[in-house]
Length: 482
Image (tube, rainbow, N blue to C red):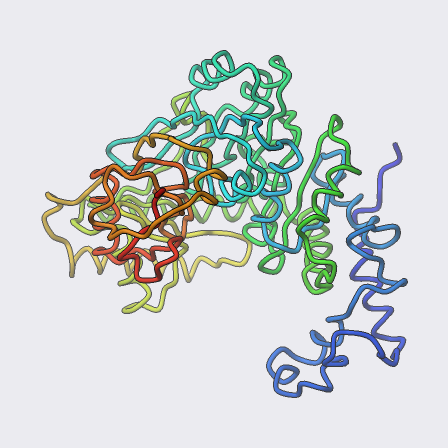
């Protein structure tokens, strides 16, 4: 097949041409190139609102692309080494959900790690598939979930030969990678699909000496969060598929839930960002890795913190590590990660990605500069000097093995009652409870509530984690099966 011209950006080019035509708009959106909403135009800029347009013949239609959007998707597929690529405008949440909905229907089993993003379990609520959890190994010292162990995946496949798919995180939020090549092979030998959540792995496709990408490993589908490390606008994402997936069916699944009024701001940002990654990604991510390695050394030299990296690799549950991830264990200075997160933001005007019970994550990518990294390192040194205390009594466990009583869909739609959360031990949960970020559920619909889980939730609330999920916004009550 003839190679495509990766220097092109078809959606961007079509929008540029459209802007020059000075078309009179008797269509939506109602702001009419910004004229009808001067405050919005002043805030976002005329250039931006003038291309916030609706689907029309010259600009194609995301629901059924036949021209510039189709061309942009073909370029993306080639750039990422996929058979097909779909532009997604509902975030990687919509990409993950369409991936699961394409592979599973009601009653199907899907093998997955429990430390998945809530979007995966949301998809099970929608389609009625049943999760078979491969409980991830845990690093007790760091208090983080690791990858899927090969032996556990093999056991799950042997015990559930009727499962239709295996889903793997590539990487986890903290940068931990499973042996995705081996997992793909095991899935395929058992006649199952392999799906990858690559929300945090866009750079694997373009950087050198990175962990293997899902498409290179032979996965059937992958959700790639271009807006995270790929440089596109928030809420823009890609869904990639391999040779054995019917693209027409995937498009039908996408069209079940995705908007019919796709944002051209988001789509053009995907188009431009893909071109940028092809042209400059290798050099950009080489610099990002250099900055992350430097920061790890400097933070570890402070004492008390542990910025972990490739030294954790053990060939199985930590098969590889994403060198761009600046994950830092804070528990040894007597502070929960979320406490360090809050101090950095409130006292130092430094916004990091997230803090949990024992760790923080500073997300490094193409827009970062070494001077800002120096600010972060010096702030962490000062926080240790000012706030360090005895770490005894701090909770460390990040992962609690769930007891699944009912499928997520059954539990979510079942008859339920609201009870005080403190009195819910022994009940079966019918909603989600999680800290966001990272958005990995502590409780999901269909799981039994235990005192250990309640202690964790209470501890996370006291430390300042942003708890989300339940119907009760104050999280004093929780919905359980009646």
